[in-house]
Image 1 (cartoon, protein in one colour):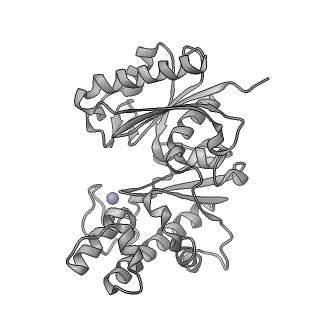
Image 2 (cartoon, helix red, strand yellow):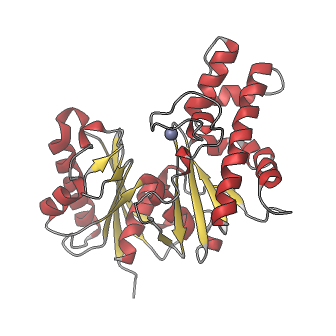
Length: 306
Ligand SMILES: [Zn+2]
């Protein structure tokens, strides 16, 4: 008998993406159907809510599953407070609103729900780069505009007692350096190891702005690029060594724009190895395999455990 199809929705700032997923398949081949619509930001909260509900109905109808009973998971940036309200979303009209409860009321059913970093980690642990380690602990890392992360234990998201498990972006790697972070801390990893941070560091040194990819390309020919990347590697090494010392995960998977930087898997890894509390580093540090699809695949997989 065929495995039941899972429905997943990834609610992003610019697009809402939906998939029907065959959870028994591997990689991107697990996606049976994919639909994208622009996020109706101008219409505000109600329009986004209606847009997600409509897309769920459309995808369920197209693959012939009953939306009242099919496993359905939703992922989005940001988090959920203990009271069930959205927080830290870059789609700011969602913040402070009970999105999950409202969507459940609209669809007349319960849904699985989590943030994008946890969805990424779940997808890469079960069907992506770390699937060989799905039975263990996978630390999924997002290094893009910001720095986030998530933890999957035996193929399921480990949210933590407060829902912040894996959020390594705001642990201080250099508490004696750098400006205050918006979180109130100083020296947070995100201030050194995000794309935004590397580009700002380069601009300050060089007196001109360049994109991260350009900065990386200019290594060896531009001393400012060398210095900015050296600072990134130092923060990455310290930050990831800290996590590995505490969590000792079976594998680490990198996602987000910075995961395309090849040197993180060589020089970055060497830096982690030199700082970790062990004579050797056996932990695989892997590039993601599912790319931009990890979020929506992870959202669908959220529904599997329910
Ligand atoms: Zn911070």
